[in-house]
Length: 93
Image 1 (cartoon, rainbow, N blue to C red):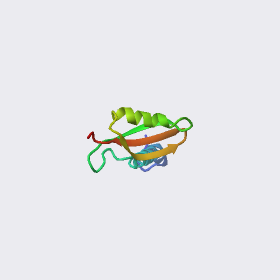
Image 2 (cartoon, rainbow, N blue to C red):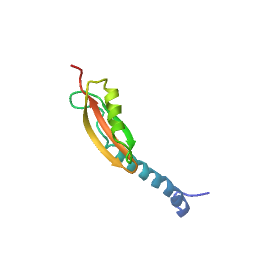
Image 3 (cartoon, one colour):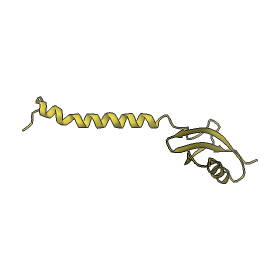
Image 4 (cartoon, rainbow, N blue to C red):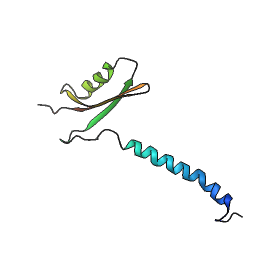
């Protein structure tokens, strides 16, 4: 039987503590993402395209999603093989 004060008990808790720290770090990284809504209430949309390919495919997705109303670019980034494009559709006039 393993007692709470024994070294074997402490070693068994070590993987749990390491997993907890990794999970907290991953959640903290997620908090730096783009806003879900702009200050004027418009929702944002995030699309990804291959970084090495034609980035116009992301712009085409934005134009199609906004049905010709146009869009405002909120954020752009490249990480590894992915190009991430965040936009908000303009309000139809």
